[in-house]
Amino acid sequence: MHPMLNMAVKAARRAGSIITRASEDISVLTVNDKGYNDFVSEVDVASERAIIEVLSKAYPNHGFLGEESGLSKEAENIWIIDPLDGTTNFLHGYPQYSVSIALQHRGEITQAVVYDPNRNELFTATKGQGAYLNDRRIRVSKKSKMQDCLIGTGFPFRDFTHLACYLSTLEELIRETSGIRRPGSAALDLAYTAAGRFDAFFEIGLSKWDIAAGGLLITEAGGIVSDFRGRENWLDTGNIIASTPKIYEPLIDIIQKHLSAELKAQ
Image (cartoon, rainbow, N blue to C red; front, side, top):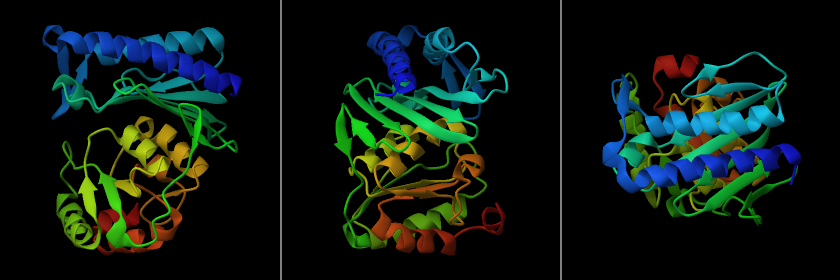
């Protein structure tokens, strides 16, 4: 395992321990609103602090981009962190959330960790060295027909600007696929796609910390990741399609058919 990946795993497990302890009595937690349907708990903050503490001690010259703390400084190496992806699930006792950590080196994602503390599942990847689940190599599914595919996604819950086109996309996909799932943690959904549990995933308007680690897992597992126009700037637009290669084209064709003018321009 790459030394930087090993350190990211250490940080993710420490954050996972904090989250697991807190999950035993959610009622005592302090929760604040960041905005409409956007919550942050003291667990998010403590988890992010623990991750940054581990990584900054090992790499004092690195920068950090965290969901709760923002960008610490510009640097050649930036750790992109979601300390608790799926906070709403966590606060409801719904066991589908994760810790996501990625390293961006000179603009390129090179290390990735997505950790599910509920199932003790650790998804990891180093660029050029494949993707793994608990040290076992994983690959995207081999599905070749849309009607056989299970698609992961996320519903708009804060910004409803593109709700109409999203619903029309869902309507067609419901008819054309085996099923649609919306578990509520994009990082974990991408990890599941890398492991072949989902055949594809798409969502509108995500943040870098939601998708940085998961995107590398997908490509290292043999999948394709792009934005809605088929370009590689999904990390910047936040509009992401990730899939097994054989269904990428039919999936992006369906999604593009229903895009609003604004989304087409992004």
